[in-house]
Amino acid sequence: MRLKTITGRDKIVLTLMAGIPALLTTALIWIPALGSVVLSFSKWNGIGGFGDIQWIGARNYHDITHNYPPFGPAWHHNLIWFAVFVLIPAPLGLFLATQLDKRIAGSRIYQNIFFLPVVLSLALVGFMVELIYAPEQGLINNLTGHTKPGNLVDWIGNPHLNLFAVLTLAVWRQTGYVMILWLAGLKAVDPALREAAALDGANEWQTFRRVVLPSLRPVTIVVSVITVVETLRAFDIVYVVNRGKNGLELLSTLVTDNIVGEAIRVGFGSALAAILLVVSVLVIVPYLIVTFRRED
Image 1: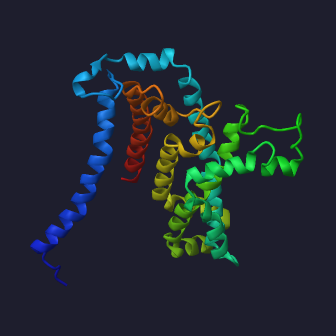
Image 2: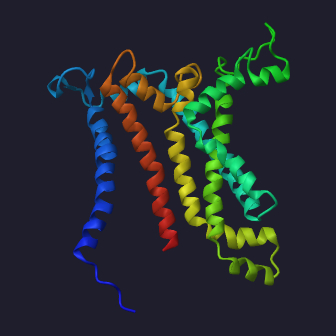
Image 3: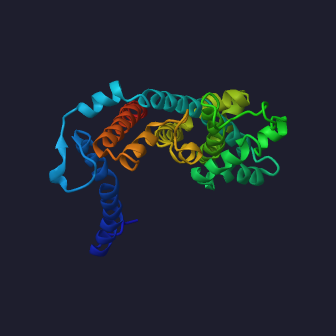
């Protein structure tokens, strides 16, 4: 069978299909990202033209690490967010996916129930946090009987509790997302591999560990990258709850506070954004390089 020759019209269509997304990605993502890196070496309040920008070198980075108290807690909270997302949604989503892949009775219903949180925006989840954890009208305090003065549990106002209260719902949403990715990978595993393992005497766990799990390596890469990205871009839910303050500081909220807050410091906020960019690149790129080298 001869392959069809690519016509001029086909070339135009292919160019548009590849060029338009590349152009939009460059214009909306890479140019602003590189612009933030450049502005991170400046002092600018966003008013006036580019001629009003004062270039101050790496002073913003020095001030962030030495003279900016919220940076330490925000960095610590992002690490906690990452650890929780690695330890709970990723394995829990894999477990749910393996159970649904067995086509148990009502698996379609369970799949829709587990995936339902994914269609909710994190901003909406943030409002749900207030409904669930409110001191007097909240669901949890009413179920546990902590609604009277002197017996209230301030889940949102207590900086020792609010991060984990918010993380609970963030994990609830993230698990469904990861589950769908794992489930798609499980559906792509060749059934003949499982049959061959069963004929060799392998039990269900041995088949999963030695046959199925290695076949899920491409999905594992996707899940790992998404986990890092979701950790660094976490913003909506904490900003809705208390504007990312009093125990809910994250690097993303610090960027917003400095760029669009009351005291606009575009250069300082850009430096924080550049730190986020560098961290994401340093984490994701080496992991992808090592992973793809193993596959080769």
